[in-house]
Image (tube, rainbow, N blue to C red; front, side, top):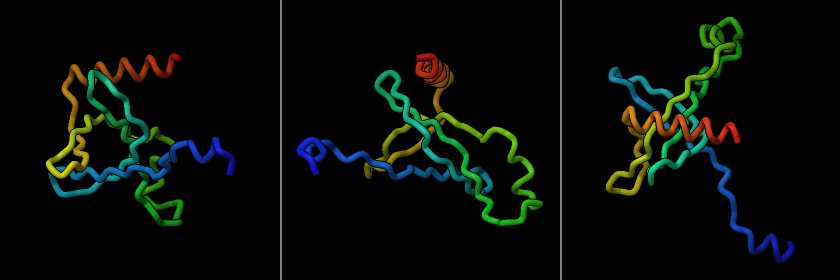
Length: 107
C-alpha cells in the first residue's frame, strides 16, 4: 500500500436503507440515493426498492417494472439518540431542494 493510500480516508459504501410505514402499518423500503444540503439542513432523495423477491415474471410485482421508481424527498433530523429521522419537508424546503437538485444536474 502506498503512502497516499494510507492517508486517504475510507469511503463508506454501505447503502442506507430507510423503512417508511404508512397509516395502516404497511412497510415500504427506500434506498437513500443522495443527500442534498440546503440552508444548513440535509435532505435525502429516497428511491423505492422493489420488495418482490419472486422469480415468477407473471406475478403482480412485475406489472409496473417499466415505470419510474417512486422517489421522495425527506428532511433528515435526528432523535434524542442521534438516530436519523426522515420527515416531510415544508413546501418551501421542497422547492429549495428541487432547485438545488436541478442546479446539480445542470452542472
